[in-house]
Length: 168
Image (tube, rainbow, N blue to C red):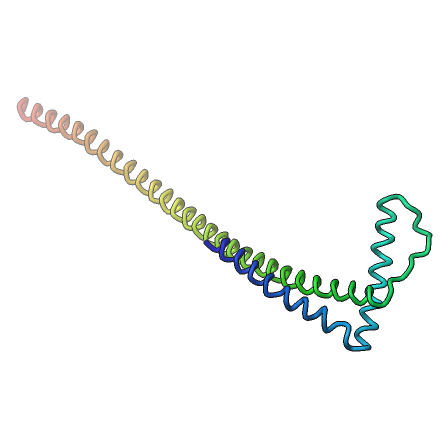
C-alpha cells in the first residue's frame, strides 16, 4: 500500500518542482553578479562535456574549445540549475524513502530477534522441564522397584516366619 502512495507522491513532487525550476531559469539571468557566476559555471560545464565527448568518440582533446556566447551560456546554466533543483528534490525524496524503509526493516529485524530469543528461552524452559520429568520418572521407577523388591522380600520373610512358627 505504501509503495503506490510513495510513487504518486514522488510524481506529484516532480510535477511541482518543474515550474519552480522554470522560474529559477527565468530569474537566473536578471541579477548581474549571479548572471556572471552562472555564465562561468556554464562555460566550465561546456568545456567538461565537450572534452568528455571528444574522449568518448576518440577525437583529439588538445584542440581549443570555443566558449559559448553569453546568451547560450545563460540559457545552459539556467537549464542546469533547473534540472539540478528537480534532481535534488527527487534525490531527497529517494533518500527519505530509503531511510524509512531502513527503519522499518530494522524494526522488523528487532521483532524477529526478540521472537527468536523468546523461542530459545521457551526451548530452554522445555528442556529443563523434560529433564525434571525424566528425573521424576527415574525416581518413581526406583521407588516402584524398591517397593516391588521389598514386597517380595517381605513376603519371603513373612513366609519364613510362618514356617518357623509352624515348626515350633
